[in-house]
Amino acid sequence: MTEYGVVLFYTTSSAMRAEKLLTKKGYTVKLVPVPRQFSSDCGIALRFDWHHHEQVRSELDKAHVEMDAIHHL
Amino acid sequence: MIYLDSAATSWPKPPEVLKAMVDVLERAGGNPGRSGHRLSIEAARVVYDAREDISRFFNISDPTRIIFTSNGTQAINIVLKGLLKPGDRVVTSSMEHNAVMRPLRSLEEQGLVLDIVPCAPDGSIDVNDVARALNSTTRLVVINNASNVAGTIFPVAEVASMAHRAGAMLLVDAAQTAGVLSIDMQAFGIDFLAFTGHKGLQGPPGIGGLIIGDHVDTSQVEPLIRGGTGSQSEIEEQPEYLPDKFESGTPNIVGIAGLRAGINWIMDRGIETIREQEKELTGALIDGLSDIAGVQIYGTRDPENTVAIVSITVTGRRVSEIGFKLDEEHGILTRVGLHCAPAAHKTIGTFPEGTVRLAPGVFTTPNEIKEAVRAVEKVVGS
Image 1 (cartoon, rainbow over the protein chains, first blue to last red):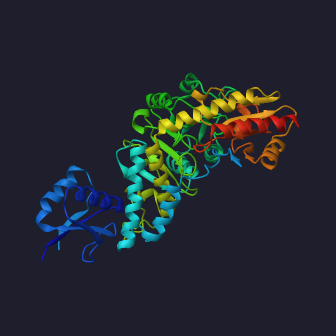
Image 2 (cartoon, rainbow over the protein chains, first blue to last red; image 1 turned 180 degrees about the vertical axis):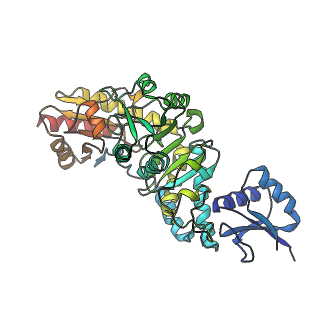
Image 3 (cartoon, rainbow over the protein chains, first blue to last red; image 1 turned 90 degrees about the vertical axis):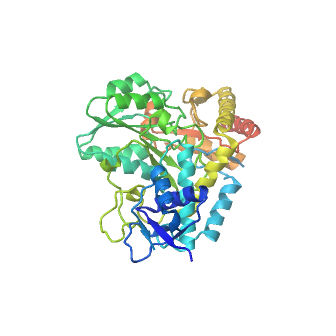
């Protein structure tokens, strides 16, 4: 079973931007409602394969996508 | 029927625009950024893709600095009411539309100081007059990119560098130029650009936007309205993040989808091609009308310095009669009167009667211009 992580964002626009950017880089990601155990500023989170969490963080940092937090599910 | 009222709203729209609007309701009918289910996410994608295309079109790097509004007027109001404080000075021109003049006059009553640069009777502005009007307490310069009455194009980039040298910012009203003239926010040095979607950008009415320059500190601008954004739902104060700070309430996703399709249609066709075509039509219209006795043409009469707007009056005749006869007897649709810009009419000398305004668009043909000229000739001679 895949281990997932989620990126939380401040705005929907950042979530959209992250999805576009990571998909283009070849990562399998999915926009999902924010799991209720996390508090988030925006209603959508980006789910990704936790094995890639370091790369995901670095790609988003590099592109200056504003992130609230990254959590392991 | 010949439609020569594109300065009021462009018509017809490219079929791609209509298709995109139907498609978004069929396929992506959720509320963007609110619910997180697939239709909501799809709607958010439509909105975000539009931000990206618009930021590319006007050359800014951060798509979150595209603020969707319902029209250009709302975008102008966000900046004027959100940025200016009593005691601030604003430099503007005597060719502005009421979208600019009315909020400024209202702020003037609350202590704003207005410096209105007088323009020439042909509608043009002398940048030296702008320089003279600026001083160290000028907070903002507000000018149109082209006049909705005379079509005269203003040297926006020059005004931007003058404003910046004086420590002021620049708001440009691009209602008559977005989609027709190439506008580069970064190269021109524009701090705020207000645009409407339903004119040159080929979108539907009810959608417009404010573009905030990449370097502008938005903490100094208060939002015009506050409310739900889908973000920070646990907090009862407005978020500071862009675009949410300035975008409360459910956005017009149908309008946004149509606007995006319009912009993509322009990018496919090439804005230079559109501009060349409009220059030719405007030149032909000015030439044709110049030969008719009794017709006065306003503006610079030079298609290089004007957008596709030609304002005329006829000696001894009411503009309303000319406009009515053009419509009733020849099927030619124009706009008559003051075009919501009393200051501009005072400048060019057509207040309070106004003008007959003929404004071709991207779908106007050279033959239609010839027919329109013939019709004006007949109406004038009748």
